[in-house]
Image (cartoon, rainbow, N blue to C red; front, top):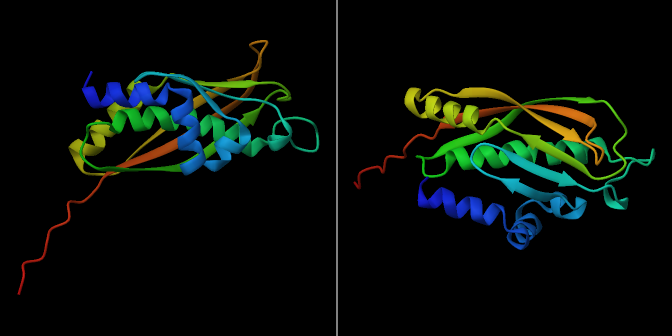
Length: 168
């Protein structure tokens, strides 16, 4: 494992560093109380508590907060896949969610498709063409029951190298 990936994973698994990152770059995750429970290059686990900041009128977690936590569980794996690679742009191009049960406690999202994301990034780098992949993040409650399933489609494309114009 490259040293840059080891350092990134260490930072992602350090709670105070992630809280500062959320505050600076993803304030909704900070406000909602999202927590990175564990991440490595193959899988990520992210959780969100039920509290007043993210509740809907039906006393459950608002769907957008659930989708945000699910996106983070897949996005962390995408960021890990990009570590140490040439510049690649990444973007969510699709989202489909299925809500199965009321989300009234802590919901934990798990995605284990880091290997597939790495292959997609490598394919984007090799071909120079945009590549898409749909990954699943499953949210479970404290009893281990599935609360929701969120499929996110990520697009990866190698960034063009800027050529400096010759001086006149």
